[in-house]
Length: 97
Image (cartoon, rainbow, N blue to C red):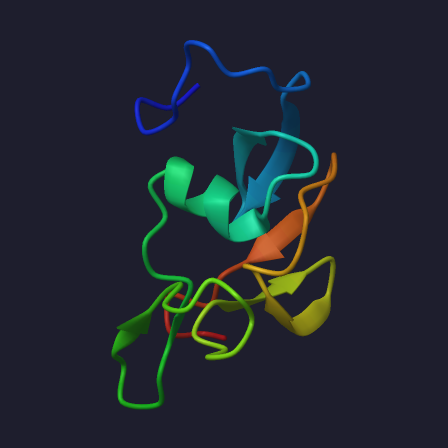
C-alpha cells in the first residue's frame, strides 16, 4: 500500500482495485473515495475553467471541489462517495472534465 497510510495498529478489510484515470490503484472498501485518491498520491481531482487544479477542501460535501466522474456518473463528490471494488473514476484533472 501507500506510504501515506497508517499501517500498524489499524484493522482494515482487504484492499480492492479501483481504476483512476485508467490506472489501477488499491483502496479499502468503505473508505471515502477522496481518502483513497489522496493516499494514492492524486492531488488534483478536477480543474476550473481557468485551469486551476482543485481537490478536497472541506471533506464533508459542501464545497464541491472534489467532484469526479464515477462509473459514468458526473459530479460525484469524492469525499462523500465510498470505495467499492471495480469503481472507474475519472478526475478531469487533465482539463478534459
